[in-house]
Each structure stands twice: as C-alpha cells, then as structure tokens.
Image 1: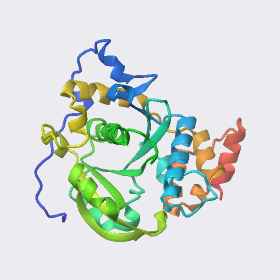
Image 2 (image 1 turned 60 degrees about the vertical axis):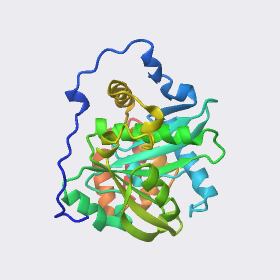
Image 3 (image 1 turned 45 degrees about the vertical axis):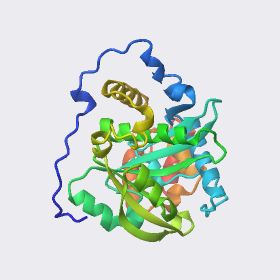
Length: 307
C-alpha cells in the first residue's frame, strides 16, 4: 500500500446525521446505562472503563494476561498501560461474563499529535495510511482471561463495541493492530484484517515477533450479510439496533480526570517517567498543573510534571 494507490471513496453516516427512533422499553435491555451493554442474553456485558475502579481493573487484568503469556518485562508493576491511555479520546472497554467477573479488556487509541503506539515499529506503514487521508485508530491492550467461559462471545462483544465507537461515533476509516505473528491468520480470516507490515520483534512485549494488520472500517458493513463475518454474524443487529447501541456507547464515554492521570501514570507506574519529551509536552497541555493548590493531588501532580 502506498500513498499514491487509488482508493474508492468511503462514505459513512455519523450519529449526528441520523434520526434514531425512540427506543421501546423492551429494546433498552441491550443498552442499559447501569448494566452496560448486554450481549447474548447477559453472557457478555461490555462497559466503558469510565471511572478509576474500572480502569484499574482493566490495567491489572491485562497485566495478568500478558504475564501468563510471558510478554511482560516489568513485573514489579501490576498494571499494563501506556502514555497513550492518558489521551482524552482513548477508550478502554471491559467485558464481564454472566457471573459479573471482568474477564476481558480492549483499548482503542485514536491518532493524535503524538501518533499511535504502532509508530514505534511501523511508522512508515502507518504514515502511508495517513498520507492516503485515512483516519486511523489502533486496537491495543487487548486480552481475554484464558479461563473465561464463552470467550468467543466476550471477543465478539468487545470487538463490536470497538467497531461501533470507531466507525459510528468517531468517524474513523481504519483499524490498525499489532499482533503476535502466530495470530495473523485468525485476524485475517475471521475479522477481515490484512497484513501491511512485516514481522518485527516488539521490545515492549518482550521481543515477541509481531505483524501490523489493517482493516478498512467500511468493509464489515458492506459484507454484513456474509455469515462468516465476525462478530456481525453472531450479533445480526439491524441498522436501527446498531445505532441504539452506538448511542449508548457514546453516552458512556468519559476521559480520565487529573487525579486519575496522576494516580496511574505518576504514582503507581513509571509511565510518565518513561514518556518521550514530545509525549510529555503534549500531555502537559491536557493535564496542566493547577494554579491553585487546593488539593494534595494537584500539588503532587505539579511536582510530578517537573520530573
């Protein structure tokens, strides 16, 4: 794929351009504000990690999963996150099983002035998409507890919510994802991804061999009636139902607060310390130190930024 490659124009409709009919009480069960978004009769419930407790649970679960996969290098820290998690548009989804246990998590990172996590290994390939006027978001920090029952339904719920957030809400045109080379066939065969980056060793995941994959987000909708398209083949939602779920996701989005930023990136991990100068300069514009020191956290936040 090169910047000069001719592409068919992508057309999509944003939530603001569509009139959604009022929901009947019966259909609200699939997108309930308190219970999250319910799939498969409650066997998978997806929430946005929109508060401290859910974010910490997601980061700790991912660290546990990646530790079991032997790709965690720093075992002294019990959470898996990156500086990109601090961005206001970054969204983490968590999935619960029918017993209320959080067994899966997935994070979406949208392009910003500090780029995407994939730039570390595949900047040239990502830049080709950007130069082709694609609006990219990256699936990162994804994992499901290996002991979780109904893992396929958990996977379907997480990917469906990520797809709706990116395509219906944020108007992104493409997913990119860096995966272990052994999972390339699964993503390409079942999720329509295609390989755009060669096998390279990724230092952050203990040098594991990875590949960069890409999915144009108009493709699943175009092939929606294909019985083999995951996860749409499992959910089979009408356009109206899909918009209802997308609206619910939109209502649950909430960027982390200054206090959460300090807690996760300065106090509990060394994420801020390891960030690049460019990343720090951009993040400082999002979480400026408070001029009035009326909270202890504010003072600590200000001192942390000086490091």
